[in-house]
Image (cartoon, rainbow, N blue to C red; front, side, top):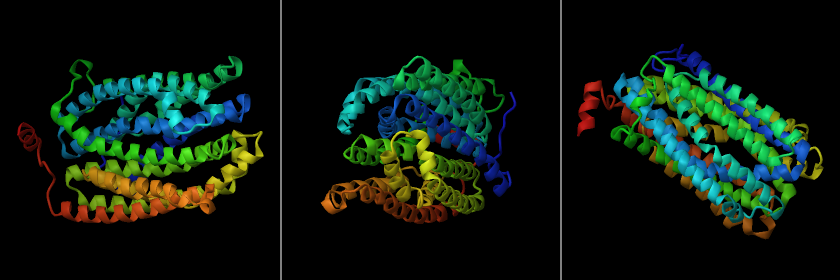
Length: 465
């Protein structure tokens, strides 16, 4: 099998970063287009309550899943560092540890998601007229979460190896299947949100099969051999050391979004519908910006492994400038086209569209700040530090938003959606400033030293200690 790899330690940076990032952006946009198709199809054929039911599950699903998705970040960083250092044995063991980790994580998520869906939705004060549909969607979604975990771990490995094209192709195939099944299940079989969830589960199974097949057919250090799958202690420990803080960060980030979603729920199902549609549109901007986070993470990890710190400094500059341009231009464009775009999701509710426009005004216009924050997180984590960005995010994002909701937002004068949404901008700004300062300190410290392991022999010696 041909491997679409870039050597992240040697490729010309500007050209390499752009070439590497574009497939990630396209993958994310495709995923969101397919997710948007979910909402559009149920909105067109089932009404705004079904849109609200699907949308209300998003923050909750992210909260439950993000801890284990963080482990895929740990796997990707470990693979990228191993490839940059030339330690093929470490890469081989990491891959054969990552796949069973993904499977076990998927089993745990299946049990938690299916068993606790309605309980979690009740904790979020999900409106009574949508909670039944939301619970149905979540149970079916989590029935197929093992496939989702395998795809996420597999794509993290491929991207760490410099291959961003294969995950794009596999996502395109599974996404097209998802849209086709959505239409069949919802339009012709009248399955409502259950049809959307079932289509997602089936399409995720296809993408997982394709990504595992890719790894099994590779001819390089990233080849997966099923008979060698097992947990390697040192690699598992490194995946956990990097991945657990990343997962906790994502989960805590989601906790603040769950609390915000609960606050939005207090304004009724029409507000939830408008908020869900606007949030889905924002996802197109966020996914584009977050692609630069993944690029910064993997380029930094590989060059940290190779000891190329000047390339890390240039990676920082290119990624920050790129994410600013992408976030600012797309944010303004989507806001300018807000009403016609929202009408695709909720054609029968002008009031819900107005709620959606309120969110877009306060989130999309300053959205580039979120992109800057995410790139800074990737830079720090690429240098091997996962706890620092977790702490900064807990304080700057989660702590600030939760404090805002339980103080300012509770004042009757400020108990508005506008007041709720402004907390996003404040948290992004504070967190980015803290992270970019921490990156500078950590970068200068590491640049004075050599790579942690200069040769594979050094690594093997360290592993036995």
